[in-house]
Image (cartoon, one colour):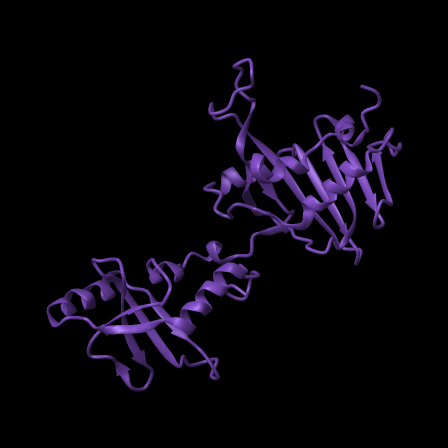
Length: 276
């Protein structure tokens, strides 16, 4: 958990634990460099407290103090609670790793948060509803009971004509792993309120096998001038990113073309092409 509030991002946690396990000392910092290292630690270093058996007292503390000039090590200072700070800093690295270890110890809360929106590696759901609020004729619901037992209906509850089961199954598989891009939306409080007061362009509701529903609302952003159709006309909407919310008053960014666009298909996407 991140600060006792949010589920943590697995990848970030693994990188951190890997560092705790594998960091090795290369050697002490040369005497002439030590004043600079201590100064960097005091002005811009990060304090890394490591707790083991005692949840109220860290077993040891690392203080990061920048990187070596050859980019093959990091300056760390060790502190043992009750014993004090090491009188000299050390150069540390991690075998079989190229890069700065301090990059793993970022401190912005949102960067630590789990980014999953829809993540069903074993397809633990039985229904998907996709609503296009400005073109309701494109909205649909897909009910799945395993194998080829798939029913797709329009917004009025009518069955889709000539359902292409292969396409429907491929669509279902897209929900194995869908993540947002970042919780950092760069909007102020007024901007967030403005987004939340809009009608979302799209709504996706997934009903899990447990009966719990997960819903995301998506908002297109205006075109940024970077993408045009084959006739040279600029796309109305930004093709890179959208804004989203999951109903908790928080707005995040998602990748549009690369991640969510394959989910935002119209009803006729599922219709089998008849004839040639």
